[in-house]
Length: 193
Image 1 (cartoon, one colour):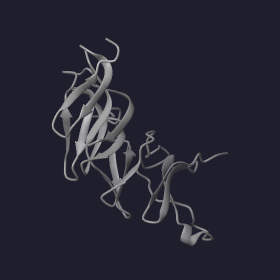
Image 2: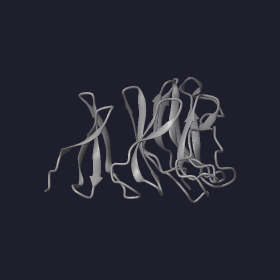
Image 3: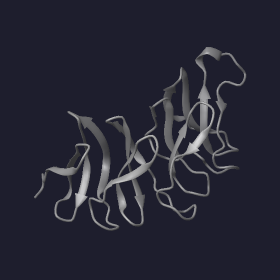
C-alpha cells in the first residue's frame, strides 16, 4: 500500500508534506533532515479532521508567508478552508462559505502580492472570486462577475511588474486575462472577441 506523499515544502529547516498513513486520512507530516536516523522521522503532526477523514485538502498550493505555512484544510465541520501552521499549532483562518461541512470555499492559487496573501475562493453569494488575507482578516477583493456568477477562472496567478495577473470572467468578455494593481481589477485584453 502507498501513503502518496505530496505537496512538499520547506519551512523552518524541515520538509512538510501531505500523506495518508491508512488510519488518519491525508494529514500534514514533517521530515527533519537533522534527525534523519530518528525512528519517529517523518511523523504525522496533524489530525485536523479527527478520525479517518482527510484533514488536508486537494489544493496544490502551499506557501510560507510571515513565518507561517498556509494550506487548505478541512476539519469536517467547515469544509475546505484556508489554514495556517506556525510550527506548533494549526489555525483555520476563515469560513468563506459558511454552513455545513459540505460547504467548501476551496481556496486555491495562494499567491503573495504586496505583502498580502491572495487566493481564489467560492461561496454561494459571489461564486469563485479573488480574496485577500492581510494577516488579520480575509476580504473579497471584488465581485468581478456580479452575483453568484464566478469571476475567477482556472490557471493560477502570477505577480509581474507590481500587478497580479489571472484569468477573470465577466459576461461581456468571457474568460480573459485580467490584472489587479492593488486598487482595482481590470481587463488586460479581450483576446478572443
